[in-house]
Image 1 (spheres, helix red, strand yellow):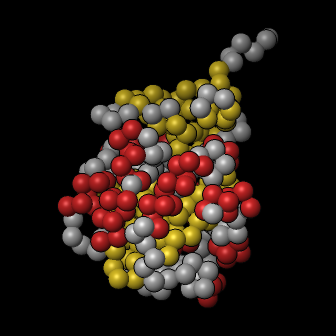
Image 2: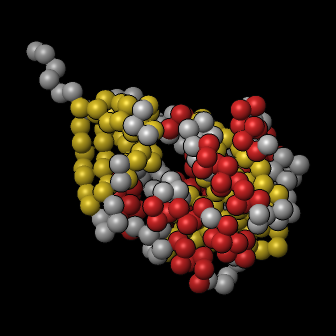
Length: 282
């Protein structure tokens, strides 16, 4: 019998090019107070988590994003006791952070509680960290949490949506200054910083704003097959430490963390940038 099901998910960059995958079935569609949430089933990538029409996570994305936004700063800071995630509702970053025994507390500030609930239901392997006694989940606007709080952290991860609409102010210099003030004197910030291939104007703006605040700012990248261009970047921003010179290889070797993407070689190699990316900062 001829297959009549012909449903596809596409995420396009400015309506011109992008990522497309055939959908086997729509598992569930929900509307939270903040956004539409879709769970889709595919053959190539397994289940997909789609928020407000943007693909966030997949069963077979090699967990590259979550591992790179967390392990790079945590294996650079010599004593990361307190960590903070702004965003990160699928709990993947939280779970990776809590693989580190040095971390005594990790706060995850996510505005949409339903994203966490849906992730627990459909992506339980991403959410194991939520049950760790060191995890503290706060359901609040991330900007308000940063601006109004006073306690400090060793490492902060900005696991944010794209810099459009209301989220755009979270990529501006005033917000980065507030984040700087929530870090300890030797603290590290890592922020997702978009695709250096598709989002070059945004990337230039993000790094100009970060360099106005932090004395040390370095881009590193990873292969993320479900994100635009499959080439994604992160900004490593530090008050004191260098991501390669201060990388604790011995701790990585000792802990023997189970990962799918991150390792010691990737940690250093990720900071090697192609010439077209270097040109963005000249």
